[in-house]
Picture 1 (cartoon, one colour):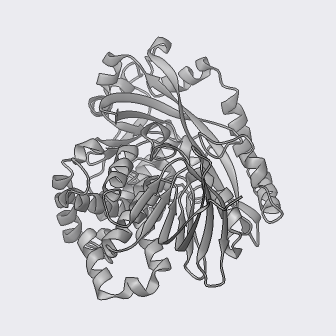
Picture 2 (cartoon, rainbow, N blue to C red):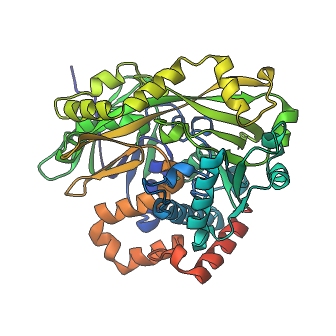
Length: 496
């Protein structure tokens, strides 16, 4: 039989049509307009997995309210370093999105970003003491200077009436408040970027295509074998650079690439569910993102929060997420994903990480065993007067926490985002979860610098970086005037 395989040559292949690939693709086309890019997505639309609005918190992760970014040390101190880094990264995202709006590369910002206060809320003497220390550590920094702290019941009731209704005013409670928080529909933003990319010369997007094999050739280029899932048509693409940004599907693809940098990596999947409010009167009462403290052993994606959201043009109210365990790496994945990901390279790190994370295992087992009544009771810790008939279960996204080899520990479980780049700069792979989408622009700018080193040094690329991200090369937390100027500008452009 004749070989009917379609063959093509390109300069960049992006695998996965989520926020990461969209961001990288657009940055590269801005830097080099004649670049040829092919994008392959297993599903039939963009942003259907982690980037979809129902599959993530939609919080513009700026560390204003997320307590897991400021853990309390053994000596009782709170280190703000990670929170500052995440806040810096989100400011970079805001600048890039403002650039896209100004250049009319994406539609009105109201389609994907809204202004909403970010709050942290705790109760009990120990937690209140911690929140005050966190506030003191953050508020002295430029990016957090507008944070407000309160233990006043009437003030907290004004900020979040739904959360305070039905509470005992004598209980020891505290909250922090940041007026400039945001709610981001990353699914809408991702699809807007892909819609724009699809209009550009040299960009081809293939939906319903699955990558089967990858092999690096002697000239360092990559041969990628792909199947059109609708027609069965086989395709071979030869590319100088490959980015794997397939969410939970990235780990199996990294294993297929068989690069030394990918050795020892494993993944631990965590599923999620929301409680979604279906009572419009209750939904209307809450106008904030209120984050609390996670349970002992809980992964960061399971930090409880009561969230006012805008999804598909409708105001929503969600609580959760509740974690669970599934062997799938994607919401639309296969139950064989986890067992098939275990190799001789990563089995020892995975076993080691598993032994060291018994509290996480116990936590997930407890979460899986929860009844609807248990979940409503958890909700009532945040909304005391919640009625079970006002809430239904909504399936959330699937996350794969990174397990990697460690010389001292054997294997460690990472809860952040991990970027792997090959020594020759021809491949980059993104693994992990939160804060992910919110910091996509910083992650991709850093990735470009690592994989396109010589081009990044050129005056042309440096000038373009500064055009897209005015603070490029500078730290806003260390420059009050620049920080105020840029925040004022992005707030106006993004209509926040």
